[in-house]
Image (cartoon, rainbow, N blue to C red; front, side, top):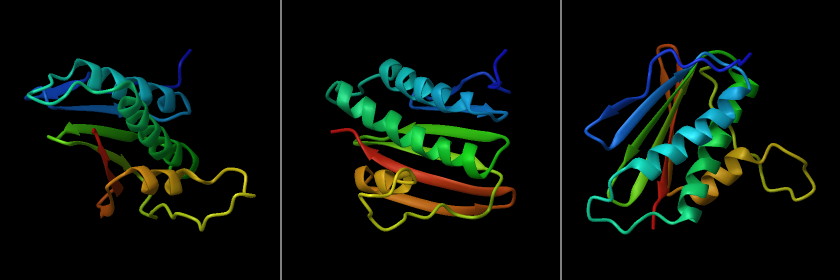
Amino acid sequence: MTDVIARDSVTRRPALSATVDFEGGVGMIAASRDFTADFLTASPNAGREPLTEDRIDVARLVVSELVTNVVRHAPGPCRLELALRPAALEIRVHDTRPVPPVARSQDPNRIGQHGMEIVLAVCTRVDIEATPHGKRVRARVPLS
């Protein structure tokens, strides 16, 4: 039995974006990583250099950290949207909790709670926006 249920099948808009909705549960962390890797692998290059495995891994890491925050702090449904831009992957994660995630100050002795530090370190931009039903975290991962 799985605790991840995609309410809608993967939706592709002009071959450069994809969306998946999850009902909740820890299984959506791995599912979101796989969804991201599959999306990047299947996306056309459209004149770009082919994506390297390390860029795909960085995108998977960011998605994993953002969705892990949902699992820990906003249990319930989650929407993951991916949009391929010329030089970046835009990742949008929607959840039901209006409280924004906070990056803690660096502390090499702290175990855990480094997710937003990681996201801020590897992304060129991170925005958090309140929505009528929670919040949306948008992060841009450079692809070159």
